[in-house]
Image (cartoon, rainbow, N blue to C red; front, side, top):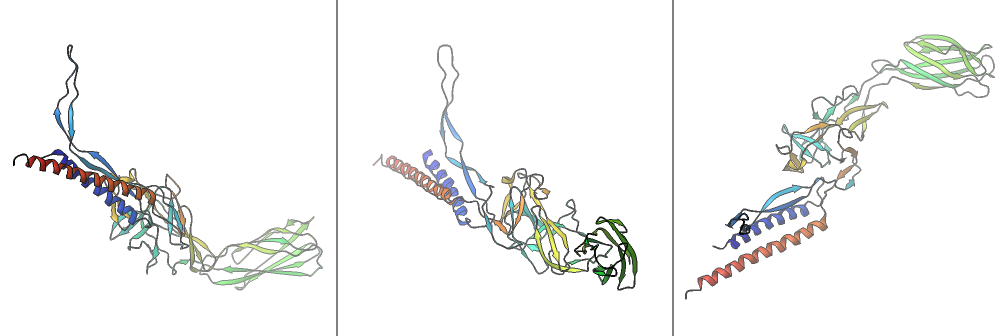
Length: 390
């Protein structure tokens, strides 16, 4: 049987594979996080019809004569180039700018993905469209241990920022030096105890010939007193007192004429609060804003990277599985150690180039047609052979 017949068949198979890969790329042109593939061909074994010979003194050498036996698919490679970004406006959507993969877990099996379209399930966990749980590190008291075990990231409205007791208050601004003796200025501090119960701390400033007397009292009956003296508008005496466990710092007060701007510039402590909203930083840190006005870290998204990403095995649902070819995953934090940065409110789109894919479609089609012509030509030759005897 003619060798060309089987060469043509191998060409049909190889170009059919190219058509399949190209068609899959075009089908996924709008799939978030999809990475296009390309086919590489190589020739198969060649049949040696004449061996080569070395040059001799009286005769020259000759080259071997080989007849190829067709083509085969050498590899189907995945192109991990960055896809374009698409704004979604959803805080749960994420995009990796650079290298790295999201880590997800479903039924205990880890997989990796570039698609960052996540939603919250009924338990407040971030999940992919197929229900896989996004992996990362949960924060404890606002601190993340990025070296700890991975787990599902939970963002729930029932998350609580604990109450914190007020231990200090700072006052700044000006007490007028030209105020009449006996004039008073009252400023209030909203303070909290360890359970989050609020109480009011009143600071009363009374003008004296020497400066200002300070009297403090809170709702629990705690009191404190002191006096402030100024020279050329600068505080020269007093400046601190303690009331009910709260240290009041008044060292920033001035005593110039004409304006009364004394105010509480800062104080610590807060009541307990529930989660109101959250935002994500470029390093994957999720910071929650609570109803008590506190901002606290609630978790961090983990990323994975591989020595050979093209060795990953596609598992469907835009996911990948680690293989011996890809190597084991390196876990890390976005923006560090070769990992890309994270952006919230965007998703990475497919990196398929339609113009290139349609060109490949034409090349594959013409290659298929040419190999089909090899088969028909070989068939005509065989037909001539069978008709030699009539």
